[in-house]
Length: 234
Length: 229
Image (cartoon, rainbow over all chains, first blue to last red; front, side, top):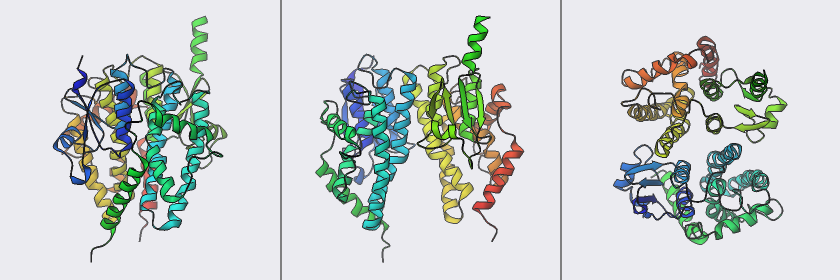
């Protein structure tokens, strides 16, 4: 059995995907070494060696074996440290549901949110908001079905779906702040509003969830860089 | 007698909504057949989706959808994992968590990178097509590398990654024929060998739609993307 000191996470404080890996390790009480990649200064040797295909974070390095892709990492953590609290539900249909929503978030919802950063003009940005709200209404409904009256998608404790969704809360709050919008609201998503507070306060989450203000500053910096890169140089 | 009755009733409880040509639906067909699971196939006409499909997959309204004992599961990779967990014979995923992670990684790679880049070659024009071709070659190189020393991505037997990459075995030749562009050539000997092994597997061989019918379909699609000037 590998020692806990043999667990490393390569990541960035602002990445929701990295958060997933760290929350999972926290749930299992696994000690790990966290290595912050300074992505704007170029990728480290270790990152390029550990993830030659995508060259992206997060990477989990267990012993000398790298594991890439955040949801693959979370499932790996769940399976290796099987004596800790379970992250995926035990029922196969519930597992399928959890995976379905994680895929929805990664393939549809979060990519939509990212378009706000590059949208030209206030109108374009505002057009994205209803799409995000629609998705959240679907997730509110899913929460009702999956939680069955309990505090989390996973029941009494944080599970796969909570992690897959909750990691985006920092960026969700930044989007709300910078667009003067309420994505999670009392009237449309009351259950999720409360769930969000519980998730962010959870012991496994609170130290890895970035502060909204810090993330907002960071977001402004990235957007400025992206616009500069997109502007033709005269 | 009782066993036959039970087997019959269990068989009726697996339904698969797909279309005749969808490679995502075909993945699920392969998985069900590899495990010997009887199922009812329902081929949808996507221009006129059935009420049942819309009810079973309200979020995406897409195929494939697996319905097991009345409960729907959508998204092909989610379906494949569900099948593997529910019917334990001929496992698609290994037991070892690291090996499982590897299979899942490559399945994702196919869906998010390889498929997209090759589709770009098929559907785009000009500079975008050139970029898609360059990306496809890079992606195929990674896949070729992964096959080193292995008969299948899963080792000795077909696994989740093989099933996910499986469209390379029956659809790439269609794309190549329609576009006149060779994508998997002698630069990828391991991939070519894998395509042979995979397509000749007794379960895979006759499970897919006929080549000629696929050519007609994709030819029509190609002409839409690249109208004669």
